[in-house]
Length: 298
Image (tube, rainbow, N blue to C red; front, side, top):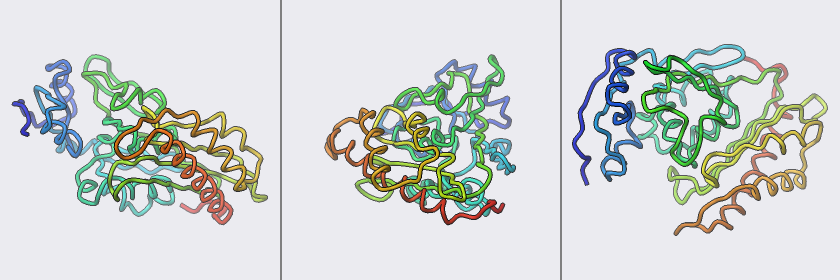
């Protein structure tokens, strides 16, 4: 199929893009990579009256590295992030997770902000954003600037808190301090690069004695949004990870999910898969933390 007719505006500034969004009042879409939007338009699942091209906006392509955080413009290409020389030292979970995002060809065009706004429940960057509790900055001509934490940003399948005339402009990723940090990202899909049937992400920090002092983990593809489990994570503080403990926590997390069934897998299988992947992620991240440097070199 072909897309329905639409107007096209190439924005020269962020203000120009926001003014055009406001002008169309919810009937416009921003486009930078288009790796999800264009196929949806071709199938007429999305029929915007106007496409606003923001590829020229260099202000949305900044990568700012600080000791305690990494600030990314929403227009940063996934491929640029993947090959950033300091990504692994600042955001090791992203360095692992981005390898699972689509294919090399789609990562060449896809943007970090575009993936988050699309809000596919199985999206890897959305899961990582929840696990790391990112801060997202939204802008509009009417509401000005506002910020949201990840858990308030993702509202449902392909549904976020971004208003009709708002644009995601900036994503701030916290950088854990102190070293002894381990990460893991696990995923199962029908084929490499396909949408995940289930995924698991984990970041753990341990003391010199091997006790867990900080931990965050989550599951993707098994609910309407990526899920994180702060209550379960709190029970791990002070403990040493073991296969039995990892399996117990993963089981409790998986039981809280509500996956759907389709031609590829039943809901019961997806819960089983989520438990297996999270068990593996917890153990892998913990073992990596035990061999990580203290303090963490940057």
